[in-house]
Image 1: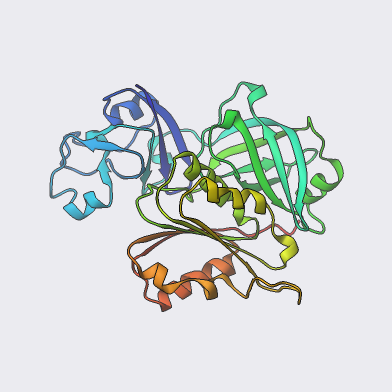
Image 2: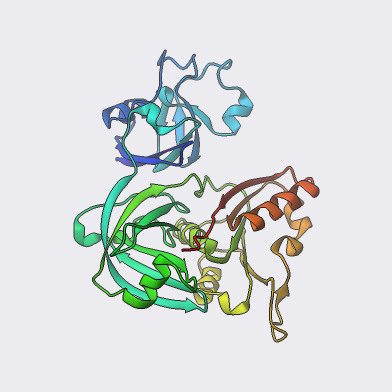
Length: 340
């Protein structure tokens, strides 16, 4: 049985390739034109070292001076000794150019739907299936979209999981005056062709073996929706708590979709936080970190994924440091929304 492998690099690029049953990972990479740095090929030099972020694997031999027992617990691996037992993703702490591999790829997609889902947000649906191309990405990654009729590119996280017959979704913040915002409001039509560059980004769902805290600020929700879709598809058994923060309650979107995860992910919880609400808002107010449950976060190891504007991300990092929550493994993506 063949599997699909993703190699993600420090420059945010990701490369996908197939691997045959019982094939050494390094051999499959080289066969697909990905020249991972190597030296001994015997498991003793560590040159081809990486880390398995998701999926099942085994290693034939690893010298204890190369990877310690703690390294192995952290899922560090040697490409020359690894055999993949499922679809899997691996991270390498160097740039993709060292592998002489091309990426990301260029695609053309067709608009199938666009609708406003809150006062400040639209969701754009694209179909890549009609082109005969296939787009692979990891849940949480993003694409650069070329706005029709312009030379402008804007970055948006996938709001869906990979696969799904190449039907893509993106949450887009509607600015008072912006290249993409004006296109969405004024010109976007079903059937429009949009170019995109993908996959991009080092923010993606890793191996799930701990309770998860997902934190979204504004349209940072998009990346976390992609992760939630993947967790639901995988039948995740770990507790998942989503915090979703916006400035005004009118900015909240995809609430029915989020509520539905309670029936698809056992132990799923959802908390909305509005930082500048009207007097009529009866939910939680202020900033997300003010509403974290310290006892919940201290109860064993936790993986936290945060996606949103830089001030929100920094405030959560500061809060975690102040609470000395060393058991929380933080993954985050800061995005700066374009003003044009």
